[in-house]
Image 1 (cartoon, rainbow, N blue to C red):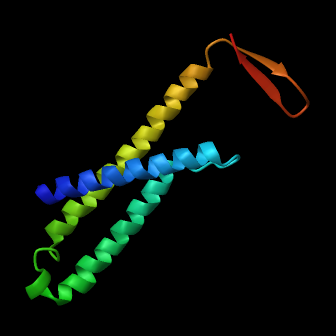
Image 2 (image 1 turned 120 degrees about the vertical axis):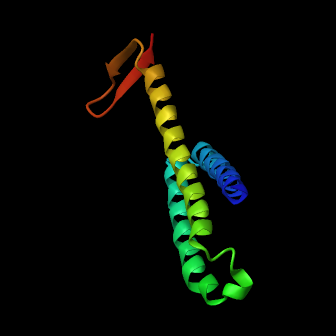
Amino acid sequence: MTNFLFGLISNLVLLAIVLSICLVCNRLIPGATLNGPHIFVALASTALLLDAALTFLVFADAQSRYGKFSSSSAFFERGSAYAVAAIAALAWQHVARRGRRAKTDDNTLVIRTSAYSESRLPM
């Protein structure tokens, strides 16, 4: 259980770092649309694949030295920590998007400024 909590906390810290970096890049670079939760899920998926390779290929050959890391239960703890953090990232994105949509749907005046664009003015 301690390994799961350590893995979960470290993954959530990594999520916070990825979200912060994506937010800063989106603010500073015009036209950048980095999606932090999707980037984190890609990183967590890659880490899970590399963790599986280490657990079942590398650590399995050296049972005497890495016995506690090569067990299936240890891999399941680490894998579930990756999965919970990825679900938290996608839930964070869903809640943020829903909150943003709720803010913009209230009484907005839409003015067609050209054939290709329109301006939205909150009332």
